[in-house]
Amino acid sequence: MSKGNIKPIRNFSGYAKKLFSAGDLVFREGDLGDEAYIIEKGRVEIFVGEEDAPTPVAVLGVGEIFGEMAIVDFATRAASARVLEDCELTVVSQEQLSERIDTADPIVRLLISMLIKRNRENLHKKSNKLGNVALMETAISEIITELEQKEIDDVGALDKIKMESELQSALEQEDFELFYQPILDSKSRKIAGFEALIRWDHPKRGMVRPDIFMGIAEETSLIIPIGQWVIEQACRDTKYIRSKIKSFNNIKKNFFMAVNVSGRQLNDPVFFDVLEHATRENHIMPSNFKLEITERVLVGGNLVEQWITECHKRGFTVALDDFGTGYSSLSYLSQFAVDNLKIDRSFVRKIHDDKKSKVIVKAIIDLAKGLGIRLVAEGIETERDAVTLRKMGCDYQQGYLYTRPLSLPELLKFLEEQYQVAI
Ligand code: C2E
Ligand code: CA
Ligand code: CA
Image (cartoon, rainbow, N blue to C red; front, side, top):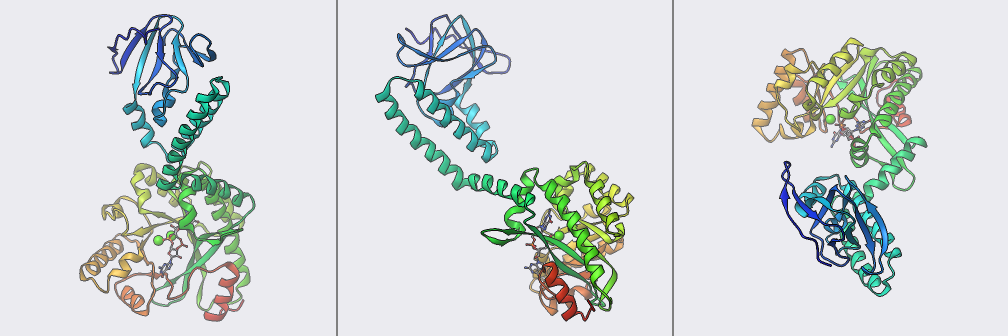
C-alpha cells in the first residue's frame, strides 16, 4: 500500500495539512519519525505487527494527536498508522514540538520521556515480532537513558522531584526548625529584634540551610504551607523568648521578630488570616512583626503595592531585603512604601576596598532616610564594618560579628552569657 496520496495544504494558523484516503498508511512501524499529526477529520487506526496481520492498539478520532513519540525521542516509529476513512490531518513538525518541549519545565520534560518509555513498553508487549522488538528495545532504552542522563546533568530534575517529596514529609513530620539571628541597634548595640531563618533537620543530611531547599519549595506550592509554618513558629518562639527573659538590660523589651516572605506567599489567600491569628494568639503587637520581601518580588508591581498597603493597614511592618543584589532601582524606594531597607552584605563587603561602592551606599542611605525608611546593614563581620556603617547612618546591624543564627536553646544561652540577660 502506498504511503498516502499526500496533498499538503496550509490552514489559517500556518500549519501544513495533509489529506489521506481510506486505507492509506500514514507511517509504518520502523520508519524514521519526522512529524506528528492532529486529526481534523476522519479516524486513524494505530497497530503493531505486519500490515496483513495487524495487532490493533488504538483507534483515534478528531482532535487526537498521534505520531508524537518518535519525534520527541528521535526514535523510529514504534507502531504503524492507517487511515480508516478519508482523513484530514494537521502536521506538527519536529521543530514545533521540540521548541515547546525544550522550553518546558525540566520536570515536565522528564515526565514526557518517562511516559513515552512506558508507552513504548506497552506497545512492544502487544507486538508479536519478537526478534525485532528485542532490537528496538535496546535502541530505545539507550535513547531514554541518554535523555534521562541529559535531564539529570542539566538541572538535577530527579533530585528535585525527590527533594520535593522529602520536603512534603518534612512538613508533615515537623522536621523544620527556626534559627534566630539578632539585629542590633547601631548606636546602643542593644538587641532590637531577631530574624527567623529556616533550617531543615534532615534525617540523613543533618541541618540543611535554606539555599539548598527553599528554591525548590518556591518553585512548587510547598512554599505556602512552609511559609505559614514559619509565621506560626516564629510567633510561638517570640512568646517563649519573652516568657524566659526576666530582665531586658541589653535587649529591647519590645523586640521585633522578622520573617522572610517569598513572592508566592503574596498570593496566599489566607496569608493575613494566618498572620493575624498567630500574632494575636501569642500576644505580639503587629508593629513588632516584620515581613521581609526581596527586591525580586517588587517586579510584581501593583500586586506588591497592594500587599504592602494591606500589611500597613493591619499594622505590620515591611522590610525590603537584599537591597543591592538585584535591580536595585532607587525608584523602588519611592514607589513601594517599605519601612526598612536591608543593605545586602555584598555591598557591605565592598565599601572598604571600593570608593565608588561607598559613595553608592551612602547615597542609598541618605535617600532612604529622606523617605523615612530605616536601614539595616547585613553581613557585619568585623568591628570596622560595624563602625563604618554606623557612621554612614545605618540604624541597625546584623552579622557574624555579633553571632551566627542560633537555635532557640542556643539563643537563650547566648543572651544569658553575652548580653547578661537574666533568663
Ligand atoms: P537572608 O534573608 O538574606 O538571610 C540572611 C542570610 O545571611 C542568612 O543565611 C544568614 O545566616 C546569613 N548571614 C547573616 N550574617 C552574616 C554574615 O555576617 N556573613 C555572612 N557571610 N552571612 C551572614 P541563611 O540562614 O542560610 O538564609 C539564606 C536565605 O534563605 C535567606 O537570606 C532568605 O532569603 C532565605 N530564607 C531563610 N529562611 C527563610 C524563610 O523562612 N522563608 C523564606 N521564604 N526564605 C528564607
Ligand atoms: Ca531576610
Ligand atoms: Ca538579606
